[in-house]
Image (cartoon, rainbow, N blue to C red; front, top):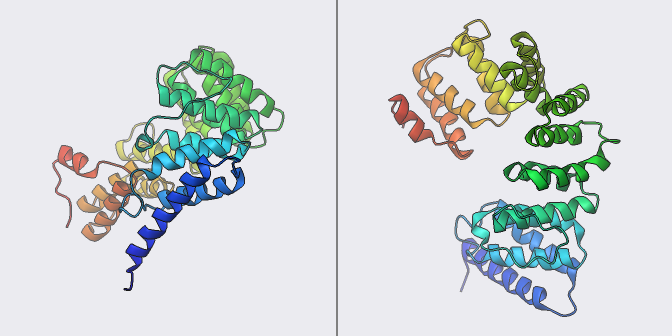
Length: 315
């Protein structure tokens, strides 16, 4: 009997999961081998095998438990992917955590992911520190203060300004707006576009600094020059509406395209509508469909948005 490619792939996936279960339960544990198995499963998840049924639903549980066993056995590079997977609702309940960092955020999964990122940061993983700070926005207080202790060792060697930027985010959430602005200014001086965008928001709203629309616009344009997706979108919207910039639909379309190419799904959807209506670009239903499809692939609710606008989606 000849197996189809899909059947063969499913059979291999079952074998992979069975081997991962076996190694996870083994004593002694071969942590390096287990990490390799888990990363193979994770790669299959990323490419969409679970969505098309090649990987069964239980693959998420097998992956999380395998990652956890490998991490606790000393494979420190596993803490970050484990934390990311725990945040996937398909992963189910997290395993027990013999961790010295309890973070009572009121959510079992959030607590577990925070612990993973904290462990990664304690072992020198910069991404772990940044992810802890990002996730900690949902549970400021004690979590935010601990985030600063993870970020502090990274300040001295921060050529991209990312550690300083995240410190600014945390300080703002902890209520220290003045220190947050100083952090964002230092990060922006290092070329960090996220910090530039934050300064645009702060100066544009008068939050933690005196409101100054001219300074805000300067920060917005500097962030956009570095292809910051939200900054590019806001520049496009400024040209489309005439708010803060001269009204110019042609210029707006160009900036929306840059924003869409930088990964902003709302920009892709907006450009699709402009192609449908012939606003700033020639009317082109086929091109419109392409932009709308891209927005949908990136998670934007295209049909719901078109319904609100009273526009029919091109075939």
